[in-house]
Image (tube, rainbow, N blue to C red; front, side, top):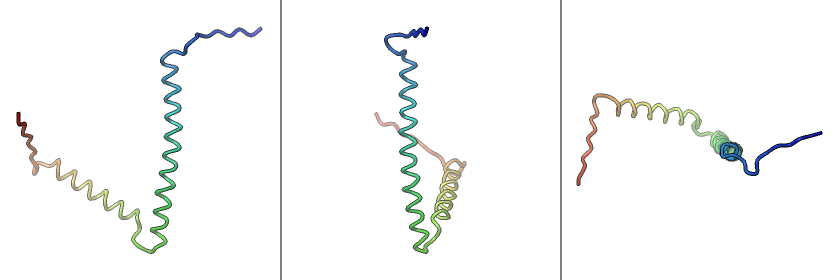
Length: 84
């Protein structure tokens, strides 16, 4: 004999888990499409014989680090003026 027991409506936690699973799978699909799109562009740039896109991205990262280091140094002061 099989006995099934349940409630008429799922609890809020169960609904949130189902929504979370749906969001996770949506994200996987979006992330995959983005990855292949970026990879396709990078491959096309490499074939054209120009600069390596990954080295350009690494230069941007270094520049961003330099800017962040500068902005957080003692050489920079920030002021906020509030006008009523």
